[in-house]
Image (cartoon, rainbow, N blue to C red; front, side):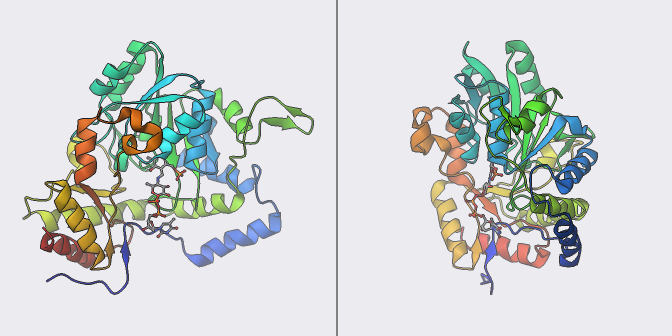
Length: 373
Ligand code: T4K
């Protein structure tokens, strides 16, 4: 029998640090009377992120959100006017950021196992006008980083990862932040780690930091000079405080998500009709973050029935990422070019996953899904 939850179970719920500790931070903010523009909490947050990721703080920069981080990263790498090969199986922000700086997203298909951009498909889409490839570690599933590194070298193109979902993922004992020329992490509240809103760029070339930091502050360099066309993409002190407090809980957040994922796997073990990509299988030796819990159904009709039916039990799963980007007006020119992505987009459902979701509730959600098959 399906269980109807008393209160809505949403696809995600942000982690919140203990209120008393956050209040202690607020008292410091009040004492400082410094709310934005490279304040002490922002500097502290950057140092702590550097330690957590094992990436030098000269190779990191914080922003107001992930989308602006992407835009400024693309601008700094000179992608305006260029073609950039990317995936249609992502949130609109990835290609919006390209379009908004004047680059042309060219869509290539995804890998059927990881749902990330396929290096083989990306290679076929490269032309003399291609300056970069922007793969997405979708759901926190790592892309084939070695495959993309080879493409970067072979064609002299930049590899910029949209790692919005991938904070906390490690490969070969190192943070995924170290892969590619640049990687962007989103700290939006729907992410496993957040700073209310926020974005982080990690980049190989430390000399980019000066320009990025300038661009996020209008590209002014003092009271009387402006040297470039920048914007306001600064992270404020309250965001940085939230980030610092959440960072303390990263180990607990990752452990709790692994437990939720394992509970879903176990609950669906007897159900051949639900395909369950397990990141542990395609990243041997790696450390996944279980940012999302995507499952695949046999066809579109089944997925839609489950998605709608779950709502009747007060469970609000999401169809990340449906429709495909190439179904949206600004990107329709890519329609029909990525059959694997089209298929996955029509069959996927992301089930509720967050820190503290009880194993009993996971079992009930899985059971509700099975009742709808
Ligand atoms: N690249 C990729 C691959 C991305 O996925 C994203 C963002 C970006 C780039 C851009 O990064 P940011 O600029 O956002 O830093 C959400 C998020 O708004 C978006 O950040 C995220 N990806 C995308 C995948 O999901 P919606 O429209 O689905 O959000 P919404 O408001 O429907 O919230 C989802 C669920 O979370 C709801 O059930 C309610 C719950 N929720 C949400 C918020 C904001 C809460 O419980 N508390 C909250 O504070 O886009």
